[in-house]
Length: 437
Image 1: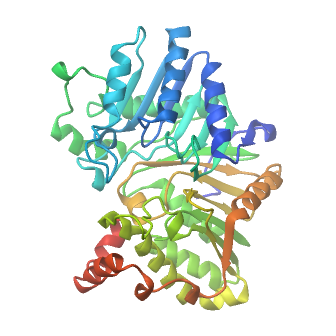
Image 2 (image 1 turned 45 degrees about the vertical axis):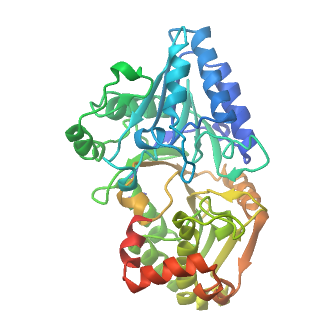
């Protein structure tokens, strides 16, 4: 697939690496302030907090400055209409959108995309901040922690790509398959006359989205970028690309994922890669760097068991591949930086092919969520040094795993976690859970 996959030509100096969440926020605000004709933002959510309100205010200022500017914000419909997990009484981010637009002289479009009929069945995980002819790509959504507004941050990847054709292609896909779809609705409607999508239209949306793709003028040589989108297990080009990158890699892989629970086909490809004598570096968040982690001193809720379930998946993989850890072929790096969390995704193969994506490389992302990614093919080697600098930066707060026994077992976990995970094992529900986590 890699050999046949065409892309958009990109000049070596057309890409920048931001490295930090504060850098992302500064870049977003600067680009929005200087936008001339269009701003398209796609993210899981735009939060009703200090950072979210600041970005929204910047968008409103841009619209006020140029009323004809095409500004669209797309977020997950269900996520926008509920409060934060564990926070009672929160009425959802759409209340903020509604209030701001009601007072605006020139309102903007904030649209909710109901990928599935229920949030747990799948969400809008499509990423990209497209401002004029520039694409800022990151797995981050918009809130305090992703933009490091206060003391905590959630670490992600941040790339700026100047390409008119890439920006046009990503806008067109959003317009064609999301904005114009009957199931996608405005989140700024007044309560008295609010019209929500029909249930049948929501149920059938996944079938329409499974056909979504980016259209662009393709080349098969030189440094290029290829945008891909995928939903569901069947004919998902993004998932297939990941497996092909692992299978076709000749020397080494550098993989980032916040939650270690790879789909079976990916785990099998990684195992074969190691057996063939090649190297894999995996950077995964420590369980305490998981965004669902609840410190033992705080009140526990069921969602807090997730980081421990992911950790046990990692332990099982490491135990099975202990021989590769000892030979130096497999290097597992656990990321941890004080109270901060880890959200990086992506794969680099042989320092030549680099996938930037918001996909978590797990069964849920591969089967339920609407995901996208950008494949950068570096035939000239122009970006090798910059990607190496980024990888060094990522590894700055990691500790290498030398033996699977360094990962805790169920007996070491807090009592509420042990209780939940024992019950899951007793009911033999772990197989089902692994498919939706």
